[in-house]
Image (cartoon, rainbow, N blue to C red; front, side, top):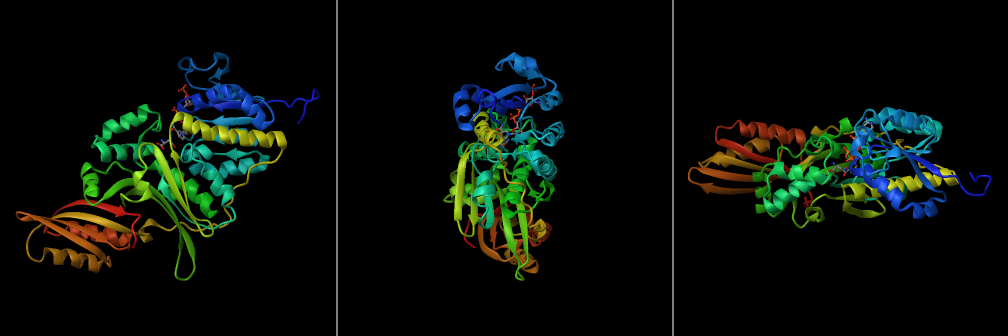
Length: 437
Ligand code: NDP
Ligand code: HSE
């Protein structure tokens, strides 16, 4: 790829989107131009940036801006960086780029989780690169370690905090008692939240990331819709106070497990939900927009990845890392690893997944109530680990912790308990993670 004059021609880059992340990508490419040239072995030249409203982008040179993203992708560029977000037009633009042999760097987890196979296929057909490190856990190098460094190991579990917005909200509610709504607005102002923050609070963002993590970890296609998803919108200040009273903290967790049956059959379970974890657990101290992910692999043992999971400069760091990688490939030849989905493990329905629960009830304080409640647990084959009862006048609070029980059994138990005449209210039902059985 050396030109007639002996100098290497530039790697030409088109960028789609220039918001929280894109602005920082443009700045870093400009400010680190000399270093990038040295690291890539050729200049990295940003040839255009597609946006919707060019008048709002005074921070970037006017001549780079265009509203015609399609034409920009079709122009003479080697790499397309996508930081628009959402499914369309990002999907069509990236398919067009990959089919034309242009390498793609994207931060778009929603797109990867829903249309990853289609994008990989287009990349494979043309031999182009598809990199997406920024799509999960912001600045933290996590996908490349899973895809490349751990490619020779057998990963059994990936678990962690992968959404900065909800972690920011839950941390503030726990530490200052701040209200849910005002903290969420602040996360939006800081650039952590998605364009539509319900993607964060309802767990869609974390579920898309869990799908990507599980697919890489278990060499299996796990689509976003196969991920069990619960967000934080039903977590109340009372849940957080109750957790604090028990030396626990509430976190939104993404958990991807390899499940091996008694007969040796394997499946994967992938879930996103709030859970109480002990304050002494390493994930309990992960505050604000930080993310942390544990990976358990057979030979490597336990690994922990920690860092800023959202934010413009932080995410731009991951985008730039990918940009350097694909640019190097264009200069030196070669390409990134392909999709590895050979294991084709089935995804286990959530109803069959076993977790531990913490259930808080307000009940009438009279003889036989505890026995009635305990009988419902027994009928549904849910084993009780501990019961704490606190009485006040004619009412009592019952706090019940279970051993591992299937989701179906637990749901059935809670429904029947709620229907008991002695039960005034089911105050909170929350999973417990990070404790010894
Ligand atoms: P923003 O909403 O801040 O920016 C989106 C940009 O895309 C804007 O510049 C917007 O243009 C442009 N855009 C939207 N639609 C179009 C279109 N049809 N054609 C051309 N341009 C368009 O998003 P973020 O920067 O926060 O996020 C971008 C991506 O990065 C998303 O996939 C997100 O999930 C991901 N991500 C974000 C992180 C973060 O902390 N923010 C962290 C990790 C990943 P205009 O400004 O003119 O409206
Ligand atoms: N909205 C996402 C979050 C951005 O809060 O984690 C990072 O992917």
